Length: 210
Image 1 (cartoon, rainbow, N blue to C red):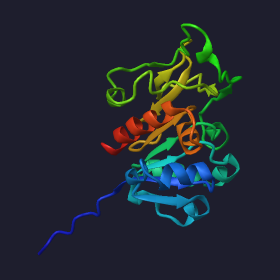
Image 2: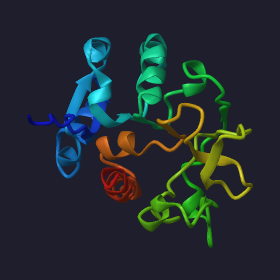
Image 3: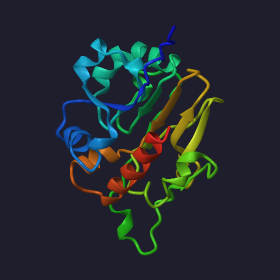
Image 4: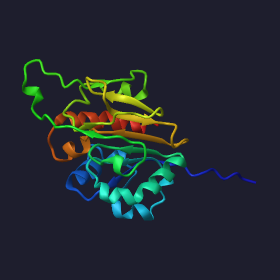
Protein backbone atom coordinates (compact mmCIF):
# COMPACT_ATOMS: atom_id res chain seq x y z
CA UNK A 1 0.00 0.00 0.00
CA UNK A 2 1.37 3.40 -0.89
CA UNK A 3 1.06 6.48 1.27
CA UNK A 4 -0.12 9.56 -0.56
CA UNK A 5 1.87 12.67 0.16
CA UNK A 6 0.07 15.94 0.83
CA UNK A 7 0.45 18.35 -2.08
CA UNK A 8 3.25 20.85 -1.51
CA UNK A 9 2.11 24.43 -1.12
CA UNK A 10 3.22 26.87 -3.76
CA UNK A 11 5.53 29.42 -2.24
CA UNK A 12 4.19 32.89 -3.09
CA UNK A 13 1.00 34.27 -4.65
CA UNK A 14 0.07 37.92 -5.05
CA UNK A 15 -3.13 39.84 -5.69
CA UNK A 16 -3.38 42.04 -8.77
CA UNK A 17 -5.63 44.99 -8.02
CA UNK A 18 -5.92 45.94 -11.67
CA UNK A 19 -3.41 48.80 -11.62
CA UNK A 20 -0.59 49.31 -14.08
CA UNK A 21 2.00 49.34 -11.29
CA UNK A 22 0.72 45.98 -10.03
CA UNK A 23 1.04 44.54 -13.55
CA UNK A 24 4.57 45.88 -13.89
CA UNK A 25 5.73 44.69 -10.46
CA UNK A 26 4.03 41.30 -10.39
CA UNK A 27 3.95 40.12 -14.00
CA UNK A 28 7.21 41.51 -15.38
CA UNK A 29 10.80 40.75 -14.48
CA UNK A 30 12.88 41.21 -12.43
CA UNK A 31 10.24 40.02 -9.93
CA UNK A 32 7.71 37.92 -11.87
CA UNK A 33 9.66 34.72 -11.18
CA UNK A 34 9.02 35.07 -7.44
CA UNK A 35 5.27 34.51 -7.89
CA UNK A 36 3.76 31.09 -8.46
CA UNK A 37 0.45 32.73 -9.20
CA UNK A 38 -0.96 36.25 -9.58
CA UNK A 39 -4.67 36.45 -8.71
CA UNK A 40 -6.90 39.21 -10.01
CA UNK A 41 -8.67 40.71 -7.02
CA UNK A 42 -12.18 39.88 -8.25
CA UNK A 43 -11.15 36.22 -8.53
CA UNK A 44 -9.97 35.97 -4.91
CA UNK A 45 -13.38 34.77 -3.56
CA UNK A 46 -13.24 31.90 -6.07
CA UNK A 47 -9.68 30.92 -5.17
CA UNK A 48 -8.52 28.38 -2.59
CA UNK A 49 -5.86 30.48 -0.90
CA UNK A 50 -4.66 27.62 1.30
CA UNK A 51 -2.66 26.21 -1.63
CA UNK A 52 -0.21 29.09 -1.18
CA UNK A 53 2.31 29.42 1.62
CA UNK A 54 2.46 33.21 1.29
CA UNK A 55 -0.08 35.67 -0.11
CA UNK A 56 0.98 39.26 -0.83
CA UNK A 57 -1.44 42.18 -1.02
CA UNK A 58 0.63 44.80 -2.89
CA UNK A 59 0.73 48.52 -2.28
CA UNK A 60 -2.34 50.66 -2.89
CA UNK A 61 -4.74 47.78 -3.44
CA UNK A 62 -8.16 49.34 -2.91
CA UNK A 63 -9.37 48.83 0.68
CA UNK A 64 -12.95 48.97 -0.59
CA UNK A 65 -12.33 45.72 -2.49
CA UNK A 66 -10.30 44.15 0.32
CA UNK A 67 -12.88 44.66 3.09
CA UNK A 68 -15.33 41.98 1.84
CA UNK A 69 -12.40 39.52 1.72
CA UNK A 70 -11.40 39.99 5.37
CA UNK A 71 -12.87 36.73 6.66
CA UNK A 72 -11.26 34.81 3.81
CA UNK A 73 -7.87 36.31 4.61
CA UNK A 74 -8.23 35.55 8.32
CA UNK A 75 -9.27 31.96 7.56
CA UNK A 76 -6.27 31.64 5.27
CA UNK A 77 -3.91 32.61 8.09
CA UNK A 78 -5.65 30.33 10.59
CA UNK A 79 -5.05 27.50 8.13
CA UNK A 80 -1.31 28.23 8.23
CA UNK A 81 -0.83 30.87 5.54
CA UNK A 82 1.36 33.96 5.73
CA UNK A 83 -0.45 37.15 4.70
CA UNK A 84 1.79 40.06 3.68
CA UNK A 85 0.03 43.42 3.58
CA UNK A 86 1.88 46.30 1.93
CA UNK A 87 1.56 50.07 2.31
CA UNK A 88 -1.39 52.30 1.47
CA UNK A 89 -3.88 49.41 1.68
CA UNK A 90 -5.33 50.72 4.97
CA UNK A 91 -5.54 47.34 6.75
CA UNK A 92 -6.99 49.07 9.81
CA UNK A 93 -10.23 49.24 7.79
CA UNK A 94 -10.45 45.52 6.98
CA UNK A 95 -8.43 43.59 9.58
CA UNK A 96 -8.90 43.68 13.38
CA UNK A 97 -6.40 45.04 15.91
CA UNK A 98 -4.43 47.25 13.54
CA UNK A 99 -3.83 50.91 14.26
CA UNK A 100 -2.68 53.20 11.46
CA UNK A 101 -1.69 56.84 11.78
CA UNK A 102 -1.07 58.74 8.56
CA UNK A 103 1.52 61.47 8.22
CA UNK A 104 2.40 64.22 5.79
CA UNK A 105 4.91 62.72 3.38
CA UNK A 106 8.22 64.49 2.86
CA UNK A 107 9.34 63.56 -0.64
CA UNK A 108 12.36 65.85 -0.61
CA UNK A 109 14.05 65.12 2.74
CA UNK A 110 17.12 63.76 0.92
CA UNK A 111 17.95 67.21 -0.49
CA UNK A 112 18.99 68.43 2.95
CA UNK A 113 22.67 68.19 3.83
CA UNK A 114 23.35 65.14 6.00
CA UNK A 115 19.71 64.08 5.75
CA UNK A 116 18.64 60.81 7.34
CA UNK A 117 15.01 59.71 7.15
CA UNK A 118 15.61 57.69 10.31
CA UNK A 119 14.31 54.32 9.16
CA UNK A 120 15.90 51.50 11.16
CA UNK A 121 15.78 47.73 11.34
CA UNK A 122 14.51 46.96 14.86
CA UNK A 123 15.18 43.25 15.28
CA UNK A 124 18.61 42.46 13.84
CA UNK A 125 18.15 38.80 14.82
CA UNK A 126 15.07 38.38 12.66
CA UNK A 127 15.71 36.43 9.40
CA UNK A 128 14.50 39.38 7.32
CA UNK A 129 17.38 41.53 8.58
CA UNK A 130 19.86 39.32 6.72
CA UNK A 131 18.36 40.72 3.50
CA UNK A 132 16.62 44.05 4.12
CA UNK A 133 18.87 46.89 5.22
CA UNK A 134 18.17 50.36 6.56
CA UNK A 135 19.26 51.84 3.22
CA UNK A 136 17.06 49.45 1.26
CA UNK A 137 14.00 50.38 3.33
CA UNK A 138 14.52 54.13 3.02
CA UNK A 139 12.64 56.28 0.51
CA UNK A 140 9.77 58.10 2.29
CA UNK A 141 7.02 57.49 4.84
CA UNK A 142 3.24 57.56 4.62
CA UNK A 143 2.34 56.59 8.19
CA UNK A 144 2.95 54.34 11.18
CA UNK A 145 1.35 51.30 12.81
CA UNK A 146 1.58 52.29 16.49
CA UNK A 147 0.39 51.33 19.02
CA UNK A 148 1.09 47.62 18.64
CA UNK A 149 -0.67 44.77 20.40
CA UNK A 150 1.31 42.27 22.47
CA UNK A 151 1.43 39.85 19.51
CA UNK A 152 2.79 42.35 17.01
CA UNK A 153 6.60 42.49 16.84
CA UNK A 154 8.09 45.58 15.23
CA UNK A 155 10.62 44.78 12.48
CA UNK A 156 11.17 48.22 10.91
CA UNK A 157 10.64 51.52 12.71
CA UNK A 158 11.02 55.28 12.33
CA UNK A 159 13.63 57.31 14.16
CA UNK A 160 11.04 57.91 16.90
CA UNK A 161 10.43 54.20 17.32
CA UNK A 162 7.08 54.22 15.53
CA UNK A 163 6.39 50.96 13.73
CA UNK A 164 6.69 50.79 9.93
CA UNK A 165 6.45 46.99 9.71
CA UNK A 166 5.30 44.36 12.18
CA UNK A 167 5.02 40.59 12.23
CA UNK A 168 2.32 38.72 14.17
CA UNK A 169 2.89 34.98 14.56
CA UNK A 170 0.34 34.42 17.35
CA UNK A 171 -3.03 36.02 16.57
CA UNK A 172 -3.73 33.74 13.60
CA UNK A 173 -1.54 30.77 14.56
CA UNK A 174 -0.34 28.67 12.88
CA UNK A 175 -0.42 31.43 10.25
CA UNK A 176 1.43 34.74 10.18
CA UNK A 177 0.45 38.34 9.49
CA UNK A 178 3.07 40.77 8.18
CA UNK A 179 2.00 44.41 7.74
CA UNK A 180 3.97 47.43 6.54
CA UNK A 181 3.30 51.05 5.63
CA UNK A 182 6.09 50.96 3.03
CA UNK A 183 4.92 51.03 -0.60
CA UNK A 184 7.66 49.51 -2.81
CA UNK A 185 5.43 47.75 -5.38
CA UNK A 186 3.83 51.07 -6.28
CA UNK A 187 7.08 52.94 -6.80
CA UNK A 188 8.88 50.14 -8.60
CA UNK A 189 5.87 49.67 -10.88
CA UNK A 190 5.78 53.41 -11.61
CA UNK A 191 9.52 53.42 -12.42
CA UNK A 192 10.71 55.82 -9.75
CA UNK A 193 12.35 55.54 -6.35
CA UNK A 194 15.25 53.12 -7.14
CA UNK A 195 15.50 52.10 -3.48
CA UNK A 196 12.16 50.34 -3.79
CA UNK A 197 13.54 48.00 -6.45
CA UNK A 198 16.39 47.10 -4.11
CA UNK A 199 13.93 46.59 -1.26
CA UNK A 200 11.69 44.27 -3.30
CA UNK A 201 14.62 42.18 -4.50
CA UNK A 202 15.75 41.53 -0.93
CA UNK A 203 12.29 41.33 0.64
CA UNK A 204 10.97 38.84 -1.91
CA UNK A 205 14.15 36.79 -1.64
CA UNK A 206 13.56 36.50 2.11
CA UNK A 207 9.90 35.58 1.65
CA UNK A 208 10.80 32.93 -0.93
CA UNK A 209 13.16 31.24 1.52
CA UNK A 210 10.36 30.16 3.83
